[in-house]
Image (cartoon, rainbow, N blue to C red; front, side):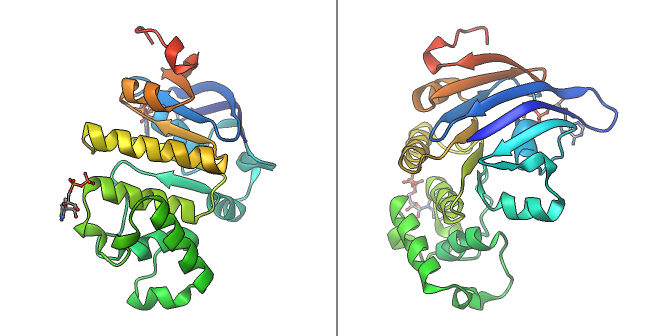
Length: 237
Ligand code: ADP
Ligand code: ADP
């Protein structure tokens, strides 16, 4: 479970871009974060894993209070938070398998004998994740040989390889066509259901969000202006 308590953020002496955000996300729930450009969606997502430091408030993930951890403790906790990105953030010249395994390390070493460093158990698991996202036959391809939809599937498998407690997903379909976007959202949805994983998805496409998330949180000017079921959303949010 994820819990945010009175989260606030301002960049240096600028205005408050997150004003007082509190909500809980239970296991397995998928939250779609919507709102106009500049509403604070990216800031909120990045505050949760402390890629950006919150100015005030607390963040709890399972029994850890993330906002009170030291930088090095946070590095360990961040491994439990799977990130999925708009532009996939793969290492293009490495294989699909190597990209997935990088989820276990949290970084990619520069040398190519990389695979030998992993216990066979990690490699078996990585094959399982690749199978889950439908890419078992692409394990040895270079990431740059894949289509956009396939690259995003690698991104999802890499997040799974972290054995995450939470998924943070930033505009996962913004670079994809409508059909592929639906496939990717359906995949994220079923993976969250199967693993009881909570997820927060920053998503621009409101109809797509309405189709695949359990709950929508609308942000505007750093405040929550809507929090409810997708079918309760009205046009003016
Ligand atoms: P969204 O993701 O909803 O488009 P952002 O979180 O990117 O919103 O931005 C929220 C506000 O914070 C905007 O007014 C933006 O200009 C400001 N902002 C974002 N990043 C920075 C930064 N690094 N320094 C100063 N202001 C920032
Ligand atoms: P998807 O099923 O993910 O929508 P596409 O229809 O986009 O796949 O692509 C079909 C095939 O074309 C894929 O198997 C992929 O290997 C190949 N492909 C797509 N984009 C590229 C690219 N930029 N470079 C190399 N191959 C690509």
